[in-house]
Image (cartoon, rainbow, N blue to C red; front, side, top):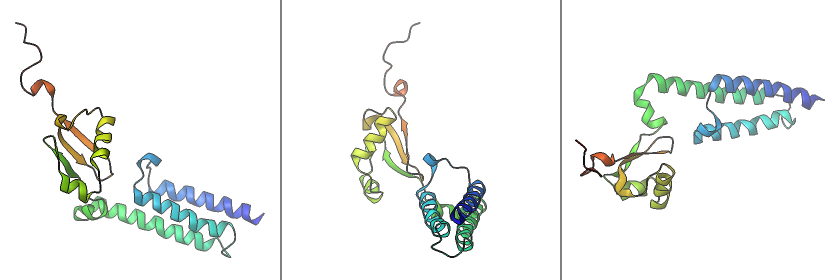
Length: 159
């Protein structure tokens, strides 16, 4: 019966911590946040299944993780110079329809992955891409050419 009490207490504590730490949905979790939650799960498991003699160490460890996460978030909102270190910077990976191979290599991104992401956003060819940016969250933003402003219009103006 003690495991039930421990589980209820740890459940309530984790619910409280996740409410304080942030409101990200699972699809928006960063890699760090996902690893943080998995690690917290491992720390909590020991306290719930009595491998550790008390729940205190699990609560303390998760509490420290939560405090550090909140502190890092606070620092990111107050100190601009720290953001590139903690979040990274967006990188241009396609410029004027030409993939920048050196950047793709340094970011470990293949041409196939780039075009797959483009197709998901309706891009048919590299020539259609004015600029593509690899965002800090891993997504790729595509800025395509406006077909009406590229060369002659498809049909002559009526008038």
